[in-house]
Image (tube, helix red, strand yellow):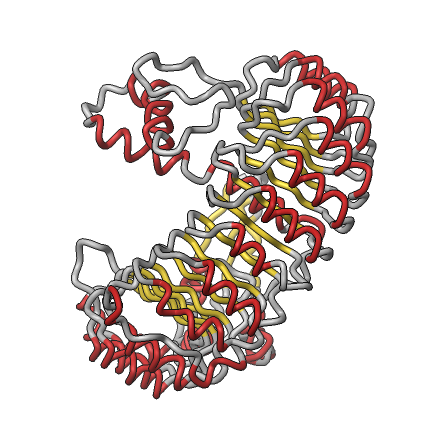
Length: 531
């Protein structure tokens, strides 16, 4: 059947739709012209209020929103005014187009300014110009904006006093700029600082106080700060602080933690990673009586004694993550104390810690709400321990075993235990075969089984200990070696070994952390988080 299409000519405005003439030729040579006016020469979207149209745009991807903005002037206007989140390349050339960008997007409340490390970033003038155009800004993220100074941050803070969340990384301003923000933004709830280069070293460092934000700050996260202790007054003065995260900040933190615990009574979440903190610091943390979440990651001076003090006082603990770094300073003794005093425990992650059936049985018996368990790089977790988990952990829903000496026999024990189990992850356990994983899937169809079979080792790579988790100092080399031994070495691209190593680090650095981060959102039980 032949078919031809033509369009009726005539003056049409942007809201009118074309009248289409379909000429359909029948096989009997009879020709009927059918005129179809699809939209009745009327823009039906004009009946939709701007607020409803904006709501529809919120369900679209960024690319689809851009396409919609080209339909007509009204859609362009509504799309621009309804866009509240914007991410911009913060190179120095941005200053020339700031007026045009924020004339269209005049309702932005969440702004990200990110610059490539090899490029020249925006300076104070550009930041001030942005602040004048975005006085309703509530969230700001700065990345690698090295041309910003204390002067620019002070001017920005005076123009955007409604700021609630600030995240800055690899910036060059210092304590004066940070104090300016805290002295002007009384609604500040969350502050994240990483590699702030402008902070003076040593005793000459200017202390950073809470300012007018002391009553509103709920979350403080400090990462990779050479002189992070100058933030001590700010932390101590944040009376309503709920979450404190300290990652790889130099200096002795025991004394600061003691003062924090005495002055801040509402802490419910504490993360300490690669920090110089000992049992004295844990003893201070034990004064946070409503603490629910505790992460101790690669803090080698923390021992069973400190963990016991925390467990005896923080009876509301729900989530506990410990990376013992294979120092064997936290073992059954500390875990049994947790089992005895923390009956509300729901999530337990042990990395480089060596529990046995003694502590696992106590945890299963006393912590009846234990739903998520991860055991990684443990030399003592074998088939008997896995069988103990299967028999005793009635509430367990998600289980992760990595680099442990378990075998198919332990996997078989899971088939008849843990009645609420929905997900099992087994990684780098060389004695577990794909046949046992398939058998477990068949036996318990409702359980998702994820088996990561280990790749053959590269004899040139630095080997880890028997548990499979890298020793201190060898972590980076091992991950890079694993990647070289698997895929990259067989490529013919001619890339250097240093590039392969960097790629290996990027690939493997957060493998375990990503798994546990997904788990943390499970069940909706972390109501105390303030994101």
